[in-house]
Length: 633
Image 1 (cartoon, rainbow, N blue to C red):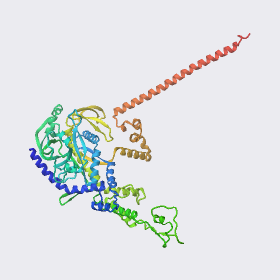
Image 2: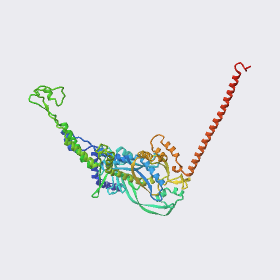
Image 3: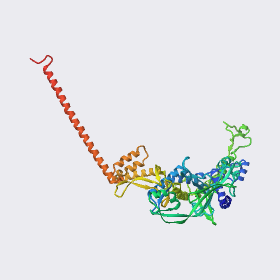
Image 4: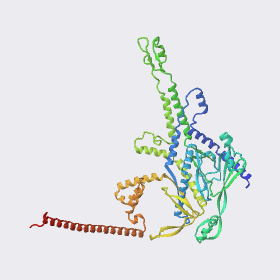
């Protein structure tokens, strides 16, 4: 396919995508500006009020509702768990997959990508994050997988023919970006700086207004292809290309192809970086999915077209009413005339200047004429009707979004803890579909990672993997490695294993729950309650309780408590338990012998001391008998 053909296909696909999303994007921009930028007054109304010198207040309550949903998801992080599916998959290799995915998420700040996408989904109806590859080091050809955030969701255009909720069926996609002209010329030397443009998207000049930027687009396309697979002598079924790439390893293991290759249906993904004039780059993507993942808000299909709605879409009118009635209240109170003084004619002739300024200045005294003092008219009071309408608008916002005072941390009518938690749970349930959509997107991201990992980490190498609690270790993949394992009889022996990431089929699940730190604290609390209810469990689970406590020396305490448990409870091999028991018995015998030696030494020292005392007493008696002058006569 020539560059002209690619550009023609890209323009046609972009026109269809932008036309399909035009209404969605217009509504999403209005939601974003309304909820986050506070542009909540119609421009004509604002201008007229400002010209008349009247107040135009914006008391934006929507960000608090948005943060409630987004931060609830931050407290309950979705986690990807990989599981073996067929007999070619290995549970221990699945743990390598899990640890590698955790490492990818940590090293690339995937939490930022997830949170940003969900924030946009709640605010304007959709957000995105993407999966990419980059070189592990500047002096290496090894690549790592990264998860990147999409800071501008309006830069992504999905497949208009997609029906899946997680973009797994996307066949086209665009990512439009604007670069400084100097950066463009440095990266693509000699390329013509012509903006990529199309209906529904503003070019560099329209977006920035200085003409010093160039707009480029990533055109992603997925096509159906046929791939060849082969059956191996050890029962595995892999792609022919994967076998050829690792033929040396299979030959060393004595594994060969059995039978003839077979063709199967698959997909090929290609990325083209284009401008309005030419194709700058063409990259063959290793995976079979377009690596851009949407996080949708509330999804509807009407007349065959997808509609995406945000949390604040239906709450904009109550927010406008709230602004209007609070502004009206402020205006009525601030601009109400001062209550005047009323008196008979001539009562204000004395101190006339003070009486004229009595409503705006404070005077120590005021003199009046006549027998009766002037009287001030009573204040009309705060406009109760306008305040009530503002309260009604506030309640309407809460009812529409399903988040009431208890969910926002404010005092409500509920008094008992159970009632407050029940109302909070109602708020969580009413907005749970946003968090569930994030879990759905992360599930597809995990599917992309499982498909991509065997191809990016195909060569023998050592990778860093993370455990559930964040502990890091190194694992050798796609190469023989010696490990110590216990067989069915409990004997520990050294065996050769290969954690081959390209062999077997793996599936995944996503579970949303508290982070490991909070789960560990919750586990410690539950264990303490169990020990209080059943004290006999303390010797058995004492080491587990200490390991979940967060204080200095907790691991050492756990190790000491664990050493007191029987070998069967610790999960040790019987031989190791017997050896440990023999060592403990010898240690006890040695301690007893040392005590006996110490006792014997003490007894010998006592006898020596007795002899010394006896000799001293004999010498004393002899000298007493002799006296000062010698023996008695």
